[in-house]
Length: 445
Image (tube, rainbow, N blue to C red; front, side, top):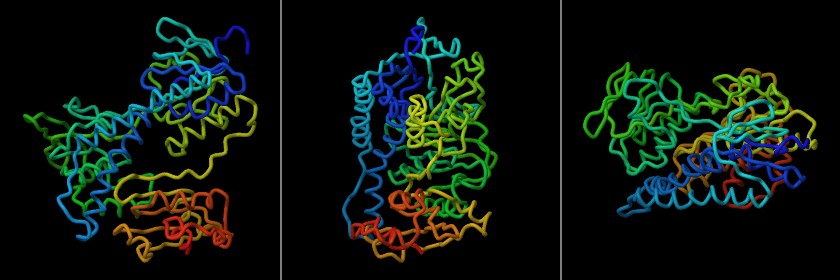
């Protein structure tokens, strides 16, 4: 490192796009700092995946009891305040634990908002920090509708600290966040309405499967209003009225789940000539921006890969290897699994149904009604469907499943998808029986 720099590498942001890879830098003798303007750990540990799954756990227990057809009986109820307290107790430990671990690895923390002065200099408050390499790992924030009454809308961060279960809840948007919130709150006792701008929920998934999930959530009591534009929100005493292109809807709580926006504001990217737009920062195949000493990782990157925590982790580790000179090849993304944590789950990985149908000369689809499998009845599952996608060499290259255990099934099949296993090779895996992993590998079409 040139003596003119304070650090070899500075990360802007201390989330998964930073802390999963950074310790390897200090282990190699590099000087490293994180600049963080909020909580260490970023969205996922503090206001995202972790909080969501903790709050979803008790509602999942309720769902299983209700599906048991009277086998599990009694006056079951959910104490939301206790569920929220438990969530907060777990969440509160993440940020200090991550910071302590990073500091033990020799990484420095600088708190405040960073903006570029030049390609090697960052302004943080009244201080300037210089670095040989900079990694932008600032993530995303919730999009907010710009309509009259927008001050009455809540984002996902607000929702994950909602103090009580509202009698009536309206969710604007039917992506991951919208449907997960709908599933949790409907089970918890809220009357939930989901407003969609168009016809399809979850555009990242096959239409057949997303429609089936919507149908199941509707059976549970969620009301879906499609092809509707939200026009304004008005306060009505202790409740609200949402006016739309197809009518008005009452609510005690309104969640704006209309998407997420990359955190590029205030970084002064234009000053150093970094290319970006509303979908994120443009990078090359080495995750370098238009300034080669400046990288970007995680959800702030403009990319076609799913913007997920494991993707950010993979990218942070790649960037560190590239900086250290250990990785000289372009980033090679693996098959990335993703799931919607609703009840039931929807999960997928690898080649999609849409991609396979577009190239019938390359792929074969095997559709399965997985409820024919006895093990699915153990936890009182009801809906269930899976599509396996094979290439012409009989290698498993893709999967999508709707079921209560879809994420575990996709995780079980992911190694086969990533490493191109054939059916006969998978049959050599002698897994634990009975288990969902055994079930997944025992029914390969």
